[in-house]
Image (cartoon, rainbow, N blue to C red; front, side):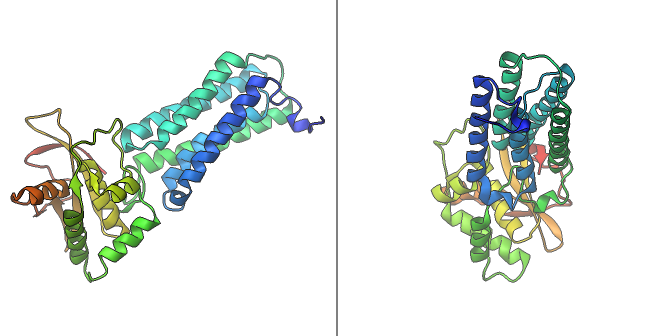
Length: 303
């Protein structure tokens, strides 16, 4: 069977063919699953590109050491950014990117040991793909490390979809001011959710679909859901991670929301459990700023 010159040196070994189609199918399925989120989160798109674009390296057989070095360097930085993205944003997608990158590095190190000269077309192709990957790396770094207005973003650890926005509109339908909308979201969560004492996540990340379908969760879920509902109304809201001063091994997550000209501290999780047990609510407590210290918790991250 004839092949175009572009594919003349492509996927000549069965191992290369298998790796290419497995990774292509993997990224295709990942894209189908995430398609509803792509239009909402630019950060999500960049991490998906970091998973999908390196697969294109398998389209051409890389023979020369310089081109192989370029690919290794690019994949190394993709791996580093994926690890950093997962650690900072607590999202699973960077792990999926790590899986793709690890498979590609394994193939290049174990199976693909050809040597020789690359054609000019091959060099141009490899460099072009590398440029696209590098651009995605820069964008992902900016989204994770230098986000603009993070308290309004759909991205990072707080990620939601159009159905969440529609739900937020329904909850806040009778609210005219930001304060009334925040109170409506708070009251709705207090009434409709319960703490899931049996839920022990292996990886702590926010899944808006799971939380809304089960009406259960832990502090991380409730804080991120509250932030998602507020941000859907264009109301500034942060998620705050912290540990008690006297119990450094215990993590907790709560919120800081902006309305009526100032920032307010609130703990939805505390008030959900307090309502269920008839205890005093935490409520809303005025802050001097979004980054003010907490009297009970050492704050580890505000996002």
